[in-house]
Length: 185
Image (cartoon, rainbow, N blue to C red):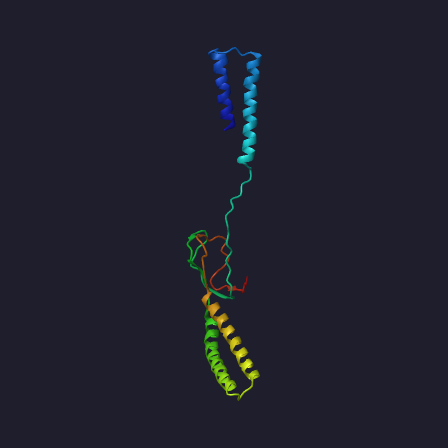
């Protein structure tokens, strides 16, 4: 671009001073012609350096969201392909929820039993038959079982990993049947 502007400028100077001879190319006009060219070139270099930096090496950067399962397990399916667009909520991959579903099925009756024992103990404490210490023990047991159940249910609910935003799948490092370790944030 700079070369085209320079050629056009000196072509105009040639027309004005040498072809049509509208002005005499005196020493003062020489200073003006070359001074204007130097000032324009300097201004262009300064402005380009300030407002439009350029480089021989270019990097294209985009925000990247790294996705990894929060639970460990076997990868069942990966319905997306590398370098294809995905929309928010699309399934990226599915983990096997069976282990966690079994844990939920195992813990639900235990929690129900612990709840019933706790309720019975509360009634007995009110009747002053059993001490407060037994009540606290039953409450702690119930809370522990409820926490385990909630964790197992959380793992079941999060065994399907979905796209958090619109974008592309890049650097896919997962295959069906591979095992994934737990990765907590």
